[in-house]
Each structure stands twice: as C-alpha cells, then as structure tokens.
Image (tube, rainbow, N blue to C red; front, side, top):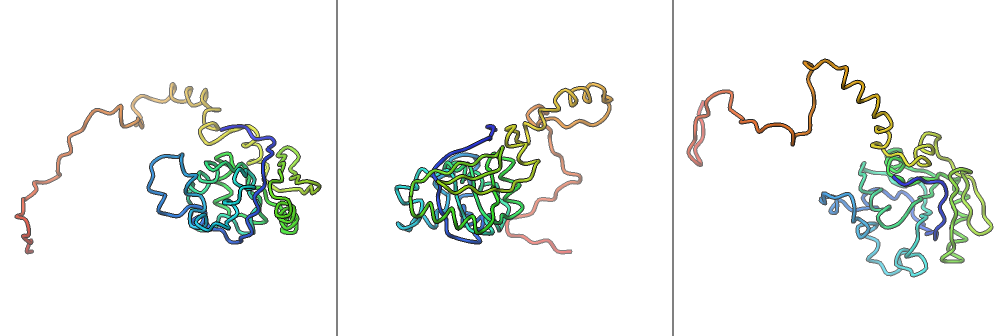
Length: 222
C-alpha cells in the first residue's frame, strides 16, 4: 500500500447525506472476482444524470470527495472503497462516517477525514463557487486546506500511523515475518498444520455409507 502523508487534488462537492454503500457501488457490480476496475461502478445510479457532479468537466479529475454526513452506511462491502480508489479518490471528507466503512478505508489506503459539518459547508461553498479548486489534505498536521479555508480533521492515531507507513493487513503481518518463521521452526512437527490447498495431494471423497441410487423423479418412502 502506498504511503500517505499529504495529498493535493481537485475537490468534489457531493451535497448528499446518508450515502450508503449501495449508492456508492450498486450490488450488481459485486459479482466481479477482481479487486480492480470498479471505477465505472462508482455512483453508477447517479452518473446517468447529466447534472451529477462527477459529470461536470471541472470535477471529473477529482481526488478529494467532500460529502454530507453519514457517509458509507449500509452493508459492509469493501467494494465501496475499491470503487472510490479506482476512480481516483484518495480522501473522503465528511462530518460522520459509518464505522465499518471508516475501518475498511484505513486498511486500503483511503483516508476518511472527519471534520465539523460547518467546515464541510465552508468547503462546499469554495468548491461550488470556484469549480476545479484544489484541496490539500495534510495527514501529518491533520489539516484540510482549500483556497483560504484551513480546517482541522480527525483520524484516529492507529489509522493515521498505518496510512503514513503504507501498511495494509498483509504489510502488518509481514512486519512479524521473523517471529512467524521462528514460531514455525520450534513448533512440534506432529501438530496440525494449515497448508495452501494447491500443495495438498488430491483426496478421493468416499461416502460414509453406501448410497442407494434412485430413479429420476422417484420418491423415498419411510
């Protein structure tokens, strides 16, 4: 995961509250088995409206989303974060986030920056008055700067550390690679082990008792 210290990009004012994960990415797109290529699914139901903010030339290249309160509510789907990142967003700013969405964001390199609602209103005013204005988000200083507006934002210390170090779950695990190897070496050989399925020999599955064949359409009577 790429380290995050500071980001500057075009701000996108999304004047909508209670944006749930199904609005971020409709469920029909969840059938894909990849973790990339979801940019076309982001806000798919709204992007059919020519007046939608992401359809405006000044905001198409946006990477800082400024949304209304209660962003990311609804079902827990990592695809919501994937869609935002695939489109190009690095930061989402809101006065309230759903806990699960905020957790998923921090694990995947998307900063969920929480600011006061009055500060969201200030940012909206600048971005709507001067479309294409850039926003600078400084994770080290925990500030958002947009033109002459500078506001603080909240992010918990642990998530901030992970983002600044560029550590996803795999990265965190690899930090303990030496300890894991040492544990495996001293662990008794007779204890059960979990191996990737591709390393296991094929196993013939046998029924526990004989299976009596039935004619198609026949029923069993007890």
